[in-house]
Amino acid sequence: MARTLLGALLNRAATVTQTPVPLVSRTAGSGILSQRRDAETQMRAMTATGTLFAIVDRLANAVSLVDWKLYRSAPSGLKEERVEVTKHAALDLWNRPNNFMPRQEFTETFQQHYDLTGEAWWVIARNARASIPLEMWPVRPDRISPVADSTAFLTGYVYTSPDGERIPLELNEVIQLRRPNPLDPYRGLSPVLSILPDLDTTRYAAEWSRAFFLNSAEPGGIIEVPGTLSDDQFDELRDRWNEQHRGVGNAHRVAILEQGTWKDRTVTQRDMQFVELRGATRDAIREAYGIPKFAVGDLDDVNRATAEAAKAWFAEQLTLPRLERIKGALNNELLPMFGAAGKGLEFDYCDPVPPDTTVEAQQLTARANAAAALIAVGLDADDVLPAVGLPEMRYIGKPTTGPDSLTLAPAEASWQDAVSGLVGTEIEAAQRWVAVEHDDDHTCGPCREVAGKTYKNRAEAYADYPDGGGYKDCTGAKYGNPCRGHVEKRGRKGEGE
Image (tube, rainbow, N blue to C red; front, side):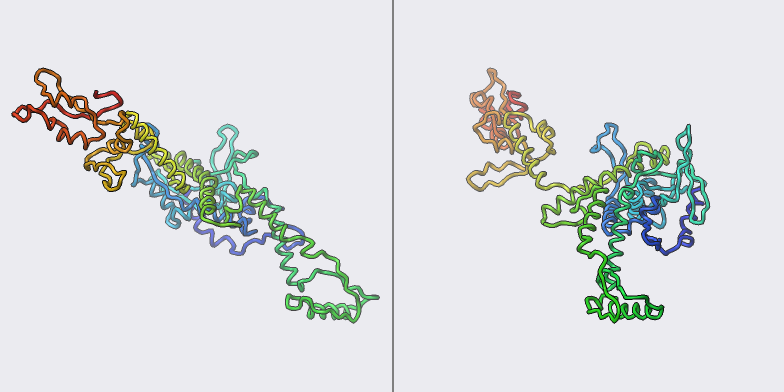
């Protein structure tokens, strides 16, 4: 069935007229947008006004530019423990849905459908010899209909081709994304429906302004003549008036009437307040989509801070919800179509929200200060670092110049040694290393005296105990008896003493 539909999709260019349907009918006073509320009208509304076009186009572009990855889920369910999958049929399908569309165009197309009609449809194409999906196509919402059922809720779909052919589709051949409709559980809800009269108003205002300039850039009026004019006299008066006064180039010319009197009878553009009217219409369109002025580039005062804030707001409030809807369709409907090969996998998008560098710097400073304070009171750095959200780090040395510099630690010294040195020698709890000696009849005087001594860092400890073992001033070592003492790293406060 999907292949039959595919043929209809590829041949639709030959059956669908290239002439767009006018948004305002030729009959005076009738607007198509406000009279028709079907999905086709909602999609055609994108060209009704520049504000709606800008909103839909920007949303579709933002969603289509986000990168996606495929992961194998971790047993713990934690994102940071997932393993990225770089080769898989589902990933290939998502990156190239069909031979005519890359993922970006595919996403942009169905996202336009979603933001204009409240729903988007993917039709799955399979090979007769393979059960897994091979292609995906975005289908116009006005051409597909759910088949409702009183017991099974939904039994399938019907696609109506441009030439009127009705093609039945199975449940596993269609994926629908929709904004829930409170009145219809099968279809989506479009923001366009709430602004159709406003779109008509915008179009009428534009047409009135155009006619205003085509008709001499002056309001209409009446020429009153005494008596009755013959047909020839009427035609001559009309032709002379149009010749001398119609058109922008003839605006404000002095009118000379041989017979008759001119009387204004219409309001001016100032009276109708077209500027305010069109501004109010733009506000109504943005309100329907929940988009402030700055989100579509309408900024009165632009600086780097406001630009970054607008970018972050747009991504967080508008792009993320749409990406979550797509992710749900990929993980809950598309991946299961791959059977066992799709189990344990999940699609996820790369976060489009730009990082706040100011907040990140403040958080990093707060974490570093918290780590230093905790280590200063004797807590082990191996426990402190993950507790405050810092990664494991190794200390590779620090400058030795300047009045506040500390002794250069060797390259193998740990990060906690460096932090211990930074808190100063006045804090006993910061002493990270301790000398351990055997206290018996064979212990020499120097070793007995150094026993229990604490050091700020590894460098100082190894200065007394080269390589961590054997006190440098041990009397026994001078006569060939190995020193039994050593230095060891202290854990939490009190440990190792």
